[in-house]
Length: 367
Ligand SMILES: Cc1cc2nc3c(=O)[nH]c(=O)nc-3n(C[C@H](O)[C@H](O)[C@H](O)COP(=O)(O)O)c2cc1C
Image (cartoon, rainbow, N blue to C red):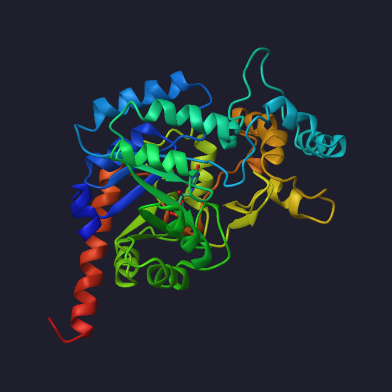
C-alpha cells in the first residue's frame, strides 16, 4: 500500500490513523502507517508535552502527526467564562432533566469534569502548537478548515506538512488556496464532525478539484478492500478514525462503551449536533435521541454546546450510564466486532487489500 505520498513521508503503508490515544497513535506508526494524535482534549500544555515525550520514546524515530481543532472563524480573546455566560438557562435545565431521568450520579467532590472541549478555542489550539513545534512532528492536521496563515507558515518553516479535513469539493478548494499540503476528503459515513457527501462520491471530486495536491480518503474505511477502493478513486492514502476505538491499545476507560461499539451495526450511528453544536456522527443513544427529539431545545452553536454538555458527559462516562453512553464513531462501527491489537488490525488491512487487488486483477483478466 505505497503511493507517492507514503514514499515521500517514508512510511510503509499509505494508511493514516487519527486517534485521541497516544498508545494507539504510536502503534499505528510502528505498524508502518502514520499515527496522528488528536490534541483537542489537551487543555494544559504540560500534558501534551508529556504525551509527545511518550510518543517520541515509542515510535523509534518513525514519523507521526498531530491534529488540532482550530475553527476557521476567529474567536480570539474570548475566554471559557465568556462562553459559559452565553448559555441559556433553559438549555441547562434540559441537560439537568436528562441526567435526573437516568439517575446519573454527580462527580465526586474535587473530581474534575474531564473533557472541557476548550481545545476548540483558538488560543488553546495555539498553545498546543507552541508545544508541538518543539517535537519532530511531521504532519499537522486541522479539523475545521485550514489553520490560519501564520500557523501554516510556521509549520512549513519547521518542515511540517499541513493537512485539513474537507467535506466538500468547495471546502477542499478553499483549503488548497490557503496553502495546505494534503486534503483529507472526509465523507458522510465518518465518525466525528462530518458533511453530507458520501466518501465514494466525495473522494474523486476532491481529487479532481485540488489536483496535484495529494488527497487522503476518509470515512467508512475499515477494511483493506475499502482502502483499495479509496486508492482506486485517486486518493494517495486513507485516513481512518473509528476502527482504532476498539483496539487493545485504546484507552476508552469503559468496558460498557467498548461492548456497545462491538455490538453496534452500521445503522446505529446518527449525525447529531448534540455533542458539539456541529453535526458529528456518533453512536445513537438516549442522549442523542433526547436532543434530536421533538422536546429538544435545539443544540447551541460551537463552542457553547460543548461547554454545556462537558460535565454531563463526564458524569455519564464516569458512571457508565448505559443508555446515555456514547462516543463519536462512524458507520464502519458495524465491522468493529472484536477487540484486537493495532498490529492485528494492520495485518487484516493488508490481507484485505491484497484480496481486493487479486479480485480486480481477475476481473480485468490480468491474473
Ligand atoms: C472518536 C473520534 C474523535 C474524532 N475527533 C476528531 C478530531 O478531534 N479532529 C479531527 O480532525 N477529526 C476527528 N475525528 C474524525 C477523524 O479524523 C476521521 O476523519 C474519521 O474518523 C474518518 O472516518 P471513520 O470514522 O469512518 O474512520 C474523530 C473521529 C472519531 C471516531
